[in-house]
Image (cartoon, rainbow, N blue to C red; front, top):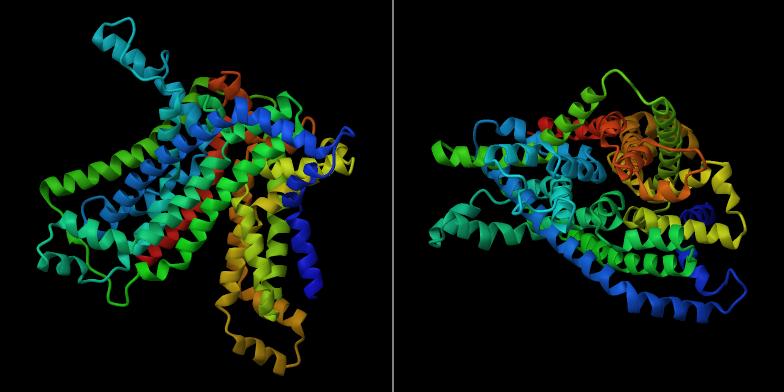
Length: 523
């Protein structure tokens, strides 16, 4: 049993070994070492510096943006009561339903020279051009889009940390002579620091993994470099080395996230939760305005823009839409089903053999793998084994990539469900003569049915939105909604992407509504 578990886990993580294979096996018969040195020297001299600087600027800018939006909204919702709070506390996670690349397309479409915002300003100011208006297709535009899409990662975790703080913490700060802001900055914020770092790490890993948004904004990051090296220049070693560089950055953030999550207990308190302070007048107005503007920019405006694009298109529908929808749903259903079965297998194996827990922790690394890095690892293995034709013949290579990327999310959900079942129930079933398989089938599965459905649901939606791995690994003539939306935007056919993009957003709303219901129950 132990060997089977370890073997399947190694097969799932095989793409990581594929990243190192080109350094030992050459595709053209030359010396792999010489090829690697030459490619790395070229990258360092011409493009690597630009990739590093633009990636760091993007990460720093988005980090600041999600800190302000996530921590600010979390503190207001957790600490104060004001008109509209009951709506904001769950509605502020709605931006998670909008993929970053969809937000990017809509941001540029609304703010470009021919967009409604500049057109209205030129008419109002009676000017032929707005020289002071910033270019939306820039690094600043990318930072803005990522910040409003990803701040809920910080908001969700930090809000919980703020709600679990000591009920007398702010009172203590007042006795020390601190103002409310000083009490927040010197006492509350340091206690919530692990939660904030964990949320920011999750969001920044999404930034590093993104391709659709950064390519549309023209920001040259490691992900765009990987696509150029593989698709435009056909240079396998350059793509692999860029992928390894990106993987190194992701590993650093992954380590920060894991270490921060292990310290989350320091952000909580054993005393009673504090009662929120009721705001009136200007305080209530500013709290409502901050939360309202965040929700407006993060979800309401993008959703209304998509609906407007759909209405402009009228009743006409691209004949390929049903094909895109069918491909997306089919590959998402297959991946979700297999991921739930694998998650149940690994979680139950650890329940029977706790010494195998390291396997599940290793599989948890999959969610930190950017789609482009994962695809390059798979492509390297297939090229070495001369099985690259599988990509054009079957969608199973794509399903395999999705499993590596998203298995950890379903595994976490199933593990939480199994942990709620006490060992005494297993012992009682064993006394009744049930073997391990019967206990799983007749006791565990019925009790964790909701966790299994939730695990499959989250994987389903993640697959529907995934773009980088799909672009590189999809079979010929197998376009998904995400790929179609990206291609329509790249061709500047924004008026036609309303329906596929809105479909992705509606699919993303499903887990968001599940989270919203959980929040309303725990309120």
